[in-house]
Image (tube, rainbow, N blue to C red; front, top):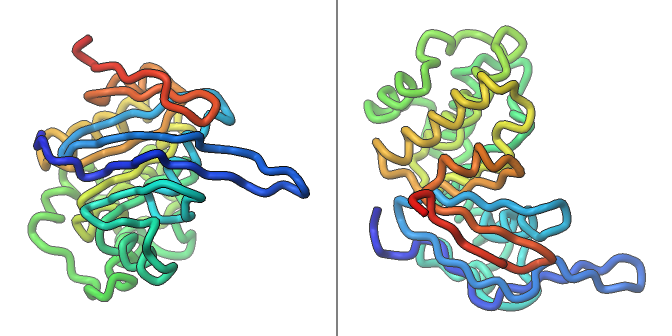
Length: 231
């Protein structure tokens, strides 16, 4: 794990307008994630963890503060700039697999390459990733012919096919049973350990959070604690 910060937020704030009322979601968040780190973010509903995830991923701008992702200041970017950053720097995995039902697993993965303008041909490194994910023999199946765990592994493959520096995972095991949850979490850990993939994962499950190097605990829009898996 490198000592360089690949994600950094400084006094990050987000306020949503609900009717005539301002609702603060983030209240001055300072966070640093090293390149090659596996960081888990936990907290109750309304703690701000999903808002932090969306801002780091360039899906929504902050109200105030800075967010530096891969050396780029997202707070100063246009919508077009954030879109480009999402295509090149960040891969997303969500609780709902978000696979296109009429496409095979292989074509679902290829969509990400088309969007990035890279064509459909995967490279040798990605072929190795497919083997690591355990889906190399399932690429011609459509989502309804795959188990939940297999669908999530296809979603992970789609997220990393373009070799993004950062993988953002939002409750990646939320729709899975315990066996498939363990399998997906082990895949994320293997990607981190074997390939040095930086992983930032939101989860409500302490057992899932333990797969990370460190865990950030949030409440009421603030980081209240940061703990290490080694104690």
